[in-house]
Image (cartoon, rainbow, N blue to C red; front, side):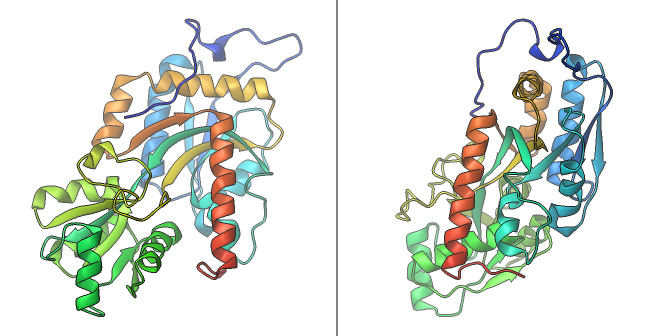
Length: 319
């Protein structure tokens, strides 16, 4: 699994003595606000990250769940905190999408934060009931053309809904979307044969593959996922420039000093050298994809452009 790293010095950067007048970091416990419910993927990741960081930090990581408003409530609490590196948040990629789907947002999702690190990639996969007579997108298109209204595709949030409908638009097919509360529920219905198709995360799909009653027929990203390495991407199957995925990123309030965000990133590097942490991610079906500030900011800006264009075309709407 790819982990993007800078050169790492032998001595941890985060524990280096601060320059004259610079506040030490950390000087007290670090709060990571997870703006989603306890027990979800981001919450599990944040808590595993805190455990992995114990040897590298003199103070513990405290994970605080502040769910509500599709991540807005907890994120706003972080944005209002002091930019001293002691209050951070772990957000998913809907942090950017919210600006284009919500009627009002009390902050600007790029301007009002300090990007620190992308942590993981949440590759979306197209799961299909094994009872269906196709194993790839070409077969899906032929089946749908011969059997109008026979297919629907499940989704759990705005990203997977958009991916499913974008695929249908590219294939010139009408495949209705069915909303689910979680990837687990979606996959249960795929396995049971109640739902023909569903776009969901590798973490949600992986536990159900052993049943033999579901198969993965496409991947949403430009590169294949190591969890289903034999499954071609949608791009490989003819959908040019089809590259959409979720991610989890660590953000701080706007105004954080560059040296401080670099020290926090160095702490993340130490966690991603922890083999127990990486093994836990693998067991959960989570792809580590550690990237520093500049690539994370570029990814956020790219997705903002994608969603702005989709909104202008009427493919996503405000609620």
